[in-house]
Amino acid sequence: MLGHIPTRLEAMKRLIVLFVFLVAVIAWAPAPASAHYWRKCGSQNHPGAGWYHVKAHNLHCRKARAVARRYTHGLVYNPSPHPLGFSCQDRPTGYEVSHAACRREAGNRIQKVRFIFGA
Image 1 (cartoon, one colour):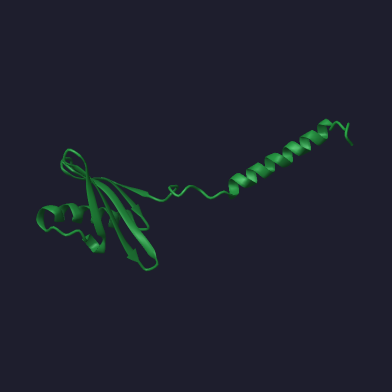
Image 2 (spheres, rainbow, N blue to C red):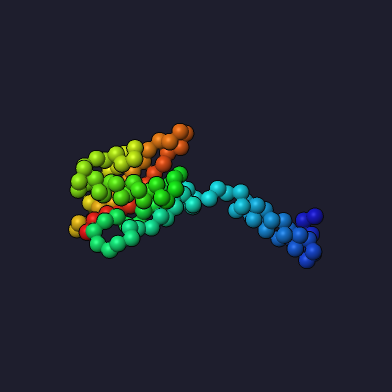
């Protein structure tokens, strides 16, 4: 068998087996953590200062937008870092612009909301 040269048919069979194996490995590999993790929920409907680029994880966009709306409204009129039961933190990222991250536990899931707010 030392001097055996594979025929074209044998070589093609090996390539097909290798191809099927690689496809199976790629299909079996888990998707990256960011894939389908965050749902894009949009921005406020009017121009000017407010909240933008809301993203949600494990909750509907309507609720995520409500969290952003109440958090930014609360900073001006009724300071509270807990809109709708979410615990929020923000950090300045530019001139009159901040990024906010909110989270809460709901049963056995953790719900998260992220957004940008400012002038």
